Image 1 (tube, rainbow, N blue to C red):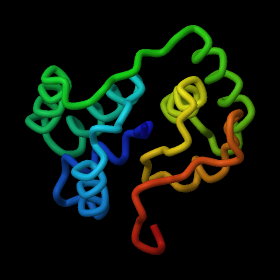
Image 2: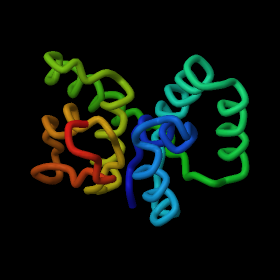
Image 3: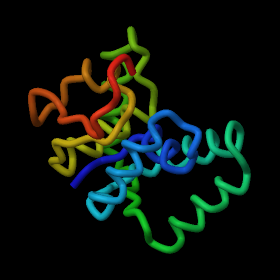
Image 4: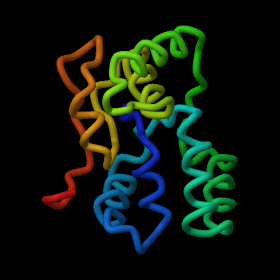
Amino acid sequence: MIVVDSGVLIATADVDDRHYPSCTQLLDERGDEFVVPAPVIVEVCWMLGRHVSIDLEAEFLASLAGGELRVEPLQADDYRRMAELVETYDNLPLGAVDAAVVAVSERLGVTTVATIDRRDFSVVRPRHIDHFELVPELMPNT
């Protein structure tokens, strides 16, 4: 299982994104392992609709309706953990969506996070492991 952050999904929808090749390859090879925390969906839609195109936002939503990705709803304990994470990492700032990725990963026992956000996910220390394995491999200086 791989918990997915917004940036990877945005990159796979936008051929002009510099991370498109690595993120698309990851989706092609391991997309059946992806688990998407529900808040990630909102952030992806907002970014696609605002910065890429409404058509891609609609296409992304249709893919969810077609069951192409497993969406994981948040539970009450996830919100509590998210609050702790946002407070603990206020210097980043972590934010709710990234905190949801961490909380869902912890609850499901997932050790791999698909993200292009190396800064936040390299700093955060999950409860169940020393650090996350971060995929995909990105080009240097990203």
